[in-house]
Amino acid sequence: MKRKTPFTSSVKNKSKSRSTQHIEDSSSDDQSSKQVMEDNLDEQSNEKEVEKKQTIWDQITRKQFISAVKELGSDKKQLDEETWRFNDFTRSKESIWSRLISKLKLNQTENIRQSLYNVWRRNRQKSADVLFESHQDSVEKVHKSDKENKVELLLPKSVNKSTASDESSPHAQTRSTVEQESNTSTIVEASFILTLKDWKDIYNSSTRKMVPGWTDMMSEKVRSCNFRCTLALKNHHVSLEESHKINSSFSHCIATCKTPSCKRTFEVFIRDEPIYRDSIVVHIRAGGDEDHSADEKAIVRHLTGKARLEVGKAASAIGCLKVLQQKVENADEEMLSARNFTGCESMEVIKHAAADYRKKFQLDEDIFR
Image 1 (cartoon, helix red, strand yellow):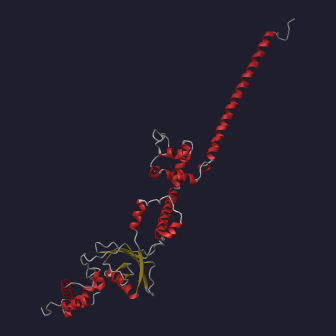
Image 2: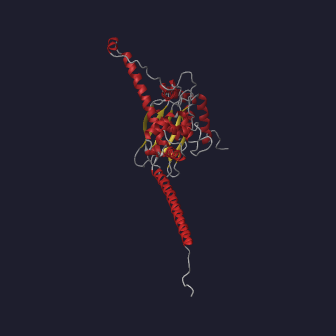
Image 3: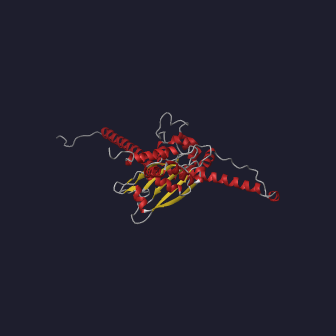
């Protein structure tokens, strides 16, 4: 009789058990190593997420950033030109971003460089304003110290003896502040009124343009506000009909003095569009130093428009010499002392005006020809 159950040796069973045990051990080791690697990756990802969540302001303050930029001095202009990415130059200590990061005591990484770059590009105007305000504060402190020293010098000797002397000398003014103080001049503001008739004579509402001859009236009105300059008006502008500009004036022009030595400029403007029921207020803002020395040549505005026709008509009626005499008698001595001879034309100009008047109205021609 044959056996139904197969015969298995004990040696084979032992080898199989050992092999299975070895496989189980190796698989457990692989699983543990994989778990360690996954844990490390999770930790790195968590660190990156934490770095992403943290902003640059968690590591520094705005005051520290502005003070570090201020310490760069004139080199801070390079912040706009140099890239934040790493290359052969930006890795060196000569890089402007490396210098800024070292002043802030941060790590030299591209993430920090990019964060600082974005902060500088987005808040550049605010940082510049803060730096300018700090500079102004330092300048004001210097001015205060100078004033205090002047007051101490003006006090009597008995008072100076009782006060304690300050051993530290005041800081000298910078070149920029000295130039700024020398260039600043007083600004004078004035105004005059145009009647409705005067405004219609110099402005065409249908075309929204000034009529030729408006400069003569404006010059005469500015002179009536105790300004002695011989004006040359230019750069005139009238706003558009449907303009949405709130801060701009309705009418605006610039006037300069024709005397070479005079640096005064005038801004003549009308704020709101005139309503044809009321009179119009014209504002004047004058700046610059007035200088009309006696050595300068006499300056006259050109005789044009209606004023030229009136002079020509008077010269044709009573003669050129009589017109010149009247103009000399009615001349303003203060204007003449400022070398402004407007309204006091010479004999040659009066003769030419009379000739133009006769030519326009054909007074010299024979009507029976």
